Every structure is written in C-alpha cells, then in structure tokens.
Length: 276
Ligand code: KIV
Ligand code: NA
Image (cartoon, rainbow, N blue to C red; front, top):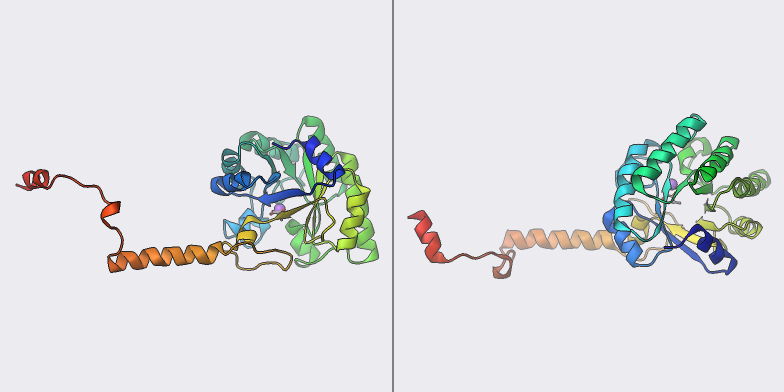
C-alpha cells in the first residue's frame, strides 16, 4: 500500500499518481488488482450508484455503507473517502465526530473535503493533529453546485484564479496531504502543482497535475447518463452488460439455457420410487 509519504515522494520523482473512484466490493477489488495508487470513495456514488440527482443528497450513512464495502474489497490500497454535503460545516465538534465515524467504521485512510474556507482549514489542521489525513478538493466543488451556478470550469478570471492559488497554499499549510483540482484551466493547474510540495490530482485539469482521478463508471461507460468531455472512455461495460443480459433472456425464452451442463442429476429410478 502507498503511504502518504510515498505519495508525496512520487510527486518529487515526477511519477504520476493514479486514483480512481470505487463504491463497492467488486469495483474496489478490481481497481486494486489493476494496481491503482489510491482509491477514492467519492460522493459521486450518489449519482453513479444510488441514482440521486446530485451529491447534495448523499449522507454520512451512505458514505459509511459504501466505504465499508470498498475497504473490504481493497485491503491493500490507500483509500480516501469523501465527507458528504454539510457534514463538515455545522461546527468543529460535529465535523470531527462525522470524520471519526466515517474513518472508524470504514477503515479508510483519509477524508476529502471541498473548499478552503477558514473552517475547512481549521478542520484540516484538527483532523491532521488527530491522525486523520485530509485531502483537499478545489475548483469545481460539486457540493456547491447551486452556489457556483452549475458544473462549469472554475478559476477562469483573474480574481478566481488568484483565489484558487491562495486556497491551495492554505490547504497545504493546514496539513492537507493532496488536493483534487477539478475543472480548472490547465495553466492554472500546472502553476498550482508547481507551487505545492503536496500532490495535485487533476480531473479536467490538464496534463500537468501530479496525478489524475476519474470516476470508475465513466472510465468503463457503465450505465452513466452523461459523460463530461474530460473523461477518456476505456470500455463499454454498460452496452456489453446489456447485450449479455439480453442474450441470457433470449436463451431462456428459446430454451437454449439451461443445458445439460448446468443441471444437477438424480437417478431416474429414485425419482420413480418417490412418486410411486
Ligand atoms: O466524488 C468524486 O468522485 C470526486 C472525484 C470526481 C474527485 O470527488
Ligand atoms: Na466528491
């Protein structure tokens, strides 16, 4: 398993860091077997596996339920887990308690929080001191979609770009072990990456981040309704799944399944005795 120190070393050595989301036992197991550096139990699970409209509906219980399955599937991979909507804004005590429950129940290694407001910086410090590594998330922060006015590129003008640079530095100073940069112009993401000693993990943030993260179901095209332009599709699992299930149904209807090789047999004489 990669440790926080090794992940930081990878940045220094210019070795790209790979992260993919996982939401359950099989996705975690397969991603671990694929030797991904880090797993993220993203709150994107709300949309991707629970059918919610946005990440705003995701609860601490949802994260715990799915996080537990992920760490059972990937026993030897560094697992980051999202703190969901409003679970780290109410008060320090409430935030710490939510983080404690999420970490203790799931055995994930780090939590991820969106934004860099003062209370997030304070929480990052408190959690780090308490032994919980914190991942930051800047740029497009989906839990704030209605404040941002939609899912769109962030940091495109002078003020917002400058703020993003300040936010990233503040998170590093507060003790964050890495920062996800989502939907940020490539030059800005490159500059931020150069300014930090902790790794940046990009998604829609160009080629120069220290690592990349994508959503599992997006990579595989597994029952996703919409795929953002920054995603590379590596498979067509959704279509292949549909075809496989269609074939199964048609085989049952036409009597091509099951066959002799799928059945359990008994002596015909015994059956005769039974119905006598
Ligand atoms: O929830 C998620 O999947 C994420 C990644 C897209 C970074 O936060
Ligand atoms: Na997320």
